[in-house]
Image 1 (tube, rainbow, N blue to C red):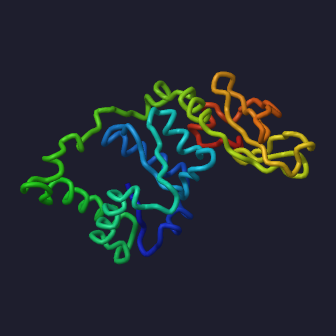
Image 2: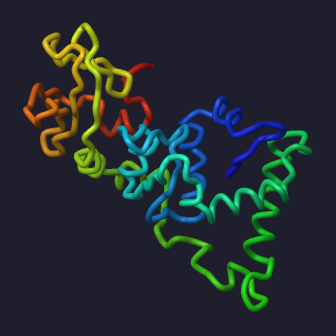
Image 3: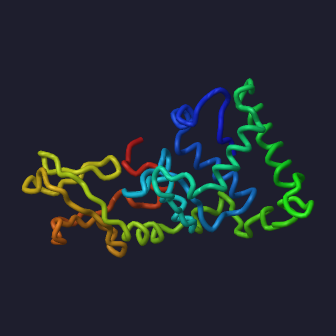
Length: 235
């Protein structure tokens, strides 16, 4: 999977690569290496924030049965092994000298193979020899079978663990996944909290004292919208 592009920063990369492209690259990786049990991510784009609702890309992974673990914000040491691995890959591949993304990808693939399969890791043995399970997770994935195994209930159960705050605007609305939800002009200027009823697939809006203010159908949370990363319903 390409994690860098020539002569640019990570901010440049994410500005030019959308969630759908990341999703497709993950599918390619899963088909090759197997589906992981969990994925640890930071709080930048496209993974969202640890203290708010997960973005569509994370919900898609959760529906596949992959746990998503957010590291604490601004603490990359919690993902130290990955950070060091990416730093090594970047130094070896020298993206600043690449003439194209294809050339960079070739270098990254070659360096990854060298580090994984040939470079001495322990007692003269490579990482692949020490950890043969690196070749495949044992959890097979095929995109053609994704819909059969994807389960929206996993997403609803996960979201039911959240209780996130929203400030009600003057028109009595709050934004959830870029869609306006009306919670009443009587709550304008107040902070409300929302969570999900996983059985009824509904948004529950609560006052600061825990009183239920409003219930709304969670029309965003369908398999089709999540898997197509289109929670706001726009074309």
